[in-house]
Image 1 (spheres, one colour):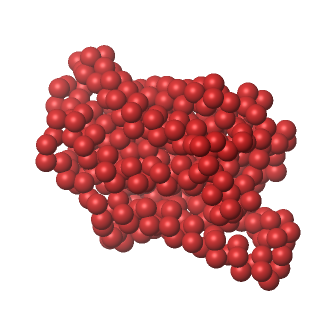
Image 2 (cartoon, helix red, strand yellow):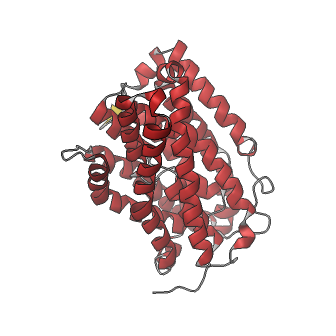
Length: 362
């Protein structure tokens, strides 16, 4: 069934695993390990790069699946039906992601990368970095938001609905928004990558979680499922995240070490954008008196990015060694620590919101 925030469900006070408790430290450690592997053991990412289909890394897909599956176990389909009857949360997420986020990303990236940092970057790289930032801004999160929702005690059923809506909108809105902002009329989006990502990161773990729930509840009962079986997966989500970071940063180790200053400059507009979009959505949700378990994940979907898609499109359009590809990877670099800070803030502001969901409307 859908989870509810409780007074005990705050960061650092609930029962969480060893890795979750010190997640910021482990994230930094894994990023360093990944960069060092890319620099001193390039054969490892070279081997992993051979295991791809439709530009999706199969090892990364498996790890993301491990991140999501434990959360999908908590989804009760009856809760999904109820979530669709509360349109305010969906409205906040949809408007923020598609009518606000892509355009604020463009404004912040253009201002910092062309005006403020232009003399250090140069016009050609500024344009490429801007392109990468726009690709991130036009791709709201689909997979990783389940992790942020889990860590902030979000409603897994409603989070699933919010993500599903974004997945559908991405299919029709991603290309025209990127084309509009970058002035590219014949942009090629790898739709096979997009569809495969949706299947891998949403459909498969959801189906597996549903089947597991039905079979185990039928055999052992709901109490066993919720209090014993799910407990066995404590830490799996976090370990999957950490291993994913090692793989992602092993691919860009050389580039990151060769451009340390540019990494910082690219990160500035991305960090500003993340906090602004989160604040916009979270503040709107508070004004509308949405439940905390809906408001937190809803704000985080827009604040974080579908970096798998952004990286794939950047490589496809501009090349693996391009500034656009580097900018999307920097998006991954800054997203995890920034989102962890937002998770902590979300958990500390539970009292800003109603304890229970508002009565269904519409």
